[in-house]
Image (tube, rainbow, N blue to C red; front, side, top):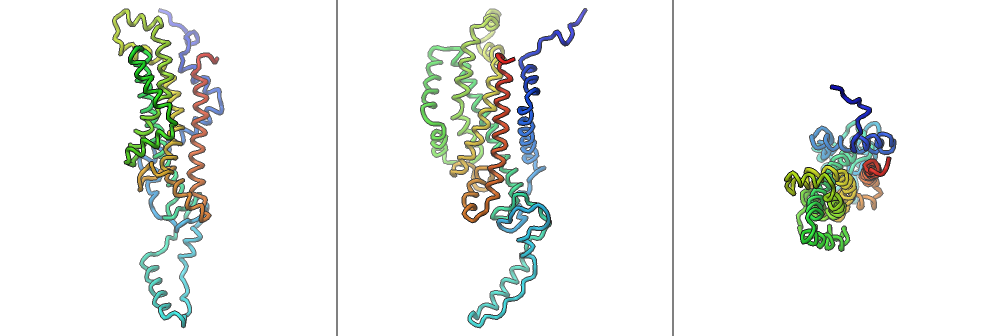
Amino acid sequence: MTTMPNDAVSPGLWALAWRRLRADRVAMAALAVVGLFLLMLVLSSTGLLAADWEEEVAVNYAPPTFVGADPASAALAKPQRPAPPNAFDPLAEELEALKRDVARSHPPVEKALTLPFGADKWGHDILKKTIKGGETSIVVGLVAAFVAVALGTLFGALSGFYGGFIDDLFNWFYSVFTSIPSILMILAVAAVLQQKGVTTIVLILGLTGWTGPYRLIRAEYIKHKAREYVMAADAIGASNWRKMFSHIFPNVSHVALVQVSILVVGFIKAEVILSFLGFGVPVGTVSWGSMLNEAQNELILGKWWQLAAAAGAMALLVTAFSLFTDALRDALDPKLK
């Protein structure tokens, strides 16, 4: 029995897509950045990274430092010379004694610190806080995108395959959801639920973001249900459910994958907007949106480093994900060679 050489085997869709991605340097660089953020997410969620982000490692609003001890902490650590007696303030000596007692019972932090982005108003390391906040924002974006694409794929498959009354019903729901601006829809659902939390945000974004995947998947099912391989499956007695998800879906799965990558970017930005407006994560949970909410008050005091850390991390991830999404969409397009 002779075997065909590997060169004679026609590569599949995913093999061709991976070949095109590898030839795109920008796409590979973006994929490396996205992979770095996902690795950070795994390490943070397992407690191997930024687990002690709530530890007070510096004084309030410590500026960014790269080497050595925090100058503000070091200044506080020096012994203070007693103030000269004040003849006009009979309680001056008692106040100085009270300050010395407080200083002895609560010694200032004096550590060899490296704070590239400084500290917040509680003395937390902003770099670790950004990593922990990224865990929340990325999890919300990923899980909500999968929920939205799963709903859009299910609704689109039913609508496109069956047609008739089912198609009219889902098209009516689609028209209702798309007639309202997405951000207003998200804020309205958030105001109705009135319960903050990561799960609530995921449900809000997932239940309002299925319209885009639905429209594309429905069109693909309408196109594929009349093709020969589906008719052959019908001839051998395959059920409608099997034809929809065992025969047609593998041929349209690239559309769902691209939609996931697109929605992740949009949902990360939506979570930041919700948390910034106070509809997002509850008190005690940090995210990039909550950090930006805190930073708006810090800017009045001239403390810019928390804003720079959260906005810079979000901009880097969103840009890399957008570039990778564009490259993935081009790589999976069968019309491009």
